[in-house]
Length: 92
Image (tube, rainbow, N blue to C red; front, side, top):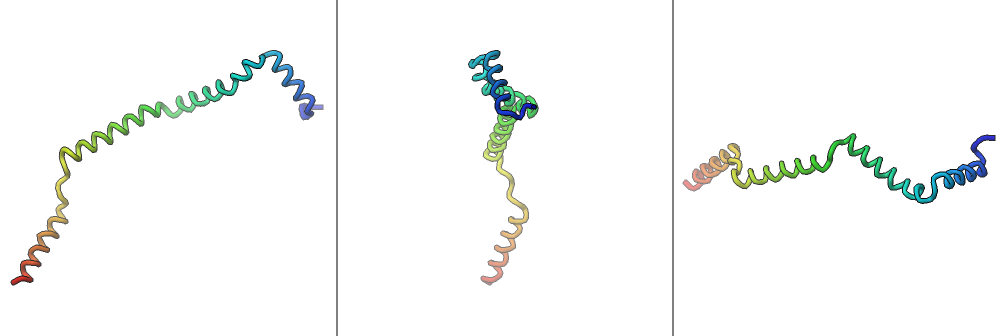
């Protein structure tokens, strides 16, 4: 005779309802969910702060690219000069 009977569980649930009442049991789910979210947030750190830092870094990088474009790649300029020399040698 253990807790494997349905009648034992029904009696247990009835006692829990009498002790805690329906209002506390109704609020148990959202309270538990909020506690778990707070625990995960505490373990992982503040995700909003990390997102804000990443967004700020992307914005600064975009500003830097607009304000100070990178110089052209040396290899591409060498190829362009070789191509123009080749074109001018063909016309001779």
